[in-house]
Amino acid sequence: MKQIAVIGSTNVDLVSYIDRMPVGGETRPVSDFQIVTGGKGANQAVAASKLGGDVLFLTATGTDSFGEMCRSKLTGFGIRKEGLFTVEGATGSTCIVVEENGENRILINKAANGKLTSALADSMEAELAKSSLIVLQLEIPLETVYHLIEFGRRHAIPVLLNPAPAIPDLELEKVVQCDFFVPNQSELSLLIGRPLETMEEIVEAAKELIAKGLKHVIVTIGSRGALYVSAETNGAVQIPPVKVTAVDTTGAGDAFIGAFAECWVRTKDIRQSLERAVSYSAQSVTRKGTQEAYLTKEEFASAEEK
Image 1 (cartoon, rainbow, N blue to C red):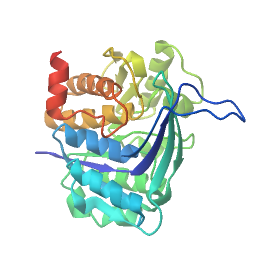
Image 2: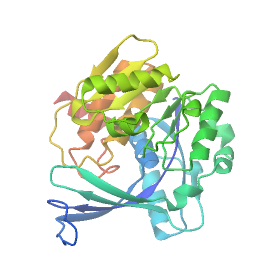
Image 3: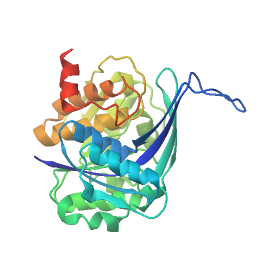
Image 4: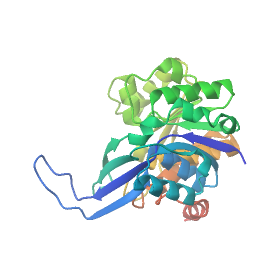
């Protein structure tokens, strides 16, 4: 089985479900509250693992009780222990508010995620070098992200970068070494520096990134599915959405990336991997939460048959 190396964040998510956001100075009741494990890196690793992928996950959690909780949950989802580093201090955390329509708002405290250094990653160099794909996000130090992009180039390992949370000063001369660049619509808008509303505007922005040297740009566009633009094709390919009733959209983009990674390392078929990722991410929003809500390989096969 081909190994997927995910290097990224682990958080404890404090999730409140409400009917609507309060206005300034207002207090609103919550209909439900959960404490669950999350983080973009962890979510993507768990999604790929639940679908049957062989996942090496490198992450940093703290010495607090939340760290113990996260490490236990990750291993329970099939993640191997050797990449789960423990660093002094608090574990990363997020406060998430989910409205009745499934839309969410998130506040994040990086904590231990900010201590996932290049040196820690290098301590796993021999194991990382066995990977068929490296998956990265931006909830860990940027220097670690750039270091691992270069690591992938030196070892001829394809790299997928999810530029989230988006930062406007991302260094494109380093990012262009990635094989797959996977922003959502709002992240692409921030990187390009202008609003993107229509499909034509999104296509044009993705083509601009291709012109700057990126090989494959995949834009997740929520209820409209996904868009794929490549240096190898003349146009753009839109992957249509799978219609579902959304309960909680938190982690849908991470489900997409985990599913894409698992399918691509197995098949090397980008179109098939995109279609599978759109379907899997759609299923992820039909239940509350992120990692707990992600379907296993068997559950997903059953859902697709319906």
